Length: 342
Ligand code: F0G
Image (cartoon, rainbow, N blue to C red; front, side, top):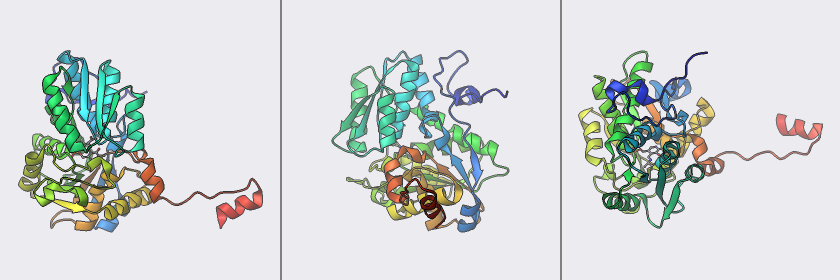
């Protein structure tokens, strides 16, 4: 039997701020598939690869950052971790704190997180606080709280999160047969694009970085915060990203751009991936593909990687809303023939 791939701290220890012998809290995250998307490539008119971050243990890229943030919290002797979240950070923080034996508290915008993420956070035993406010307000409050109490803040304002998430760029460099020209990635709080850019730089690569925001939550596109962000892609319903400057620097200095995609465009890409590539991602993730399809590749861009940040099962409500209906059938051969074949 082949040995299991270790988690990212063990795999990339010399490039991460951890020493041999440090405590490691891991669920063997990372080592996610990078697949060639043939139908999408045909439609987009260039070679498109998909990095399936939904294949991480809790179903999103957050696990790469969380193994680092929670391991560092244990090393520092923290007893509890806290975060604000649109859902995935909450699910990941809850899982890794459960594994570490730490208390976890997650603050989420009331009624605005996908069902699967809520189920995860609750099942892992985190204290789930539904804030009557949005993500930006939640983040402001937890930042304040973390200065007053001995709790470790595990949002992407925590540098360990960026360190962990940069390993996805290392993997792409290892997995692709030759160099990539551009990366397409959804942008919410702007931590992940910052992390990829750091990872590519450390690996000596400079792909164009294209960040995509939902049109109703596109502060970087408008150049100013959005007070009441709205989008079907609840994971990126963020109006004032914490890593604003770094994300803008990644996009401008790489020759990329930040652009908006509408909810309709996001859902089109979401359905296209599921129906034509066999890849079920959550709506926010599909923003990367929507951006590529709607805004098109830049000149001299022949090979791109789209990052699919979270699994489609996270948000079953949007899926059922977007998908076809089931076919009811009586338990008789003639009826089943009609149901299946007609
Ligand atoms: N895609 C998904 C599925 C996300 O959950 C997030 C962020 C992003 C993209 C954007 O990444 O914030 O680093 O720019 N989710 C955070 C959360 C905000 O709380 O789960 P970003």
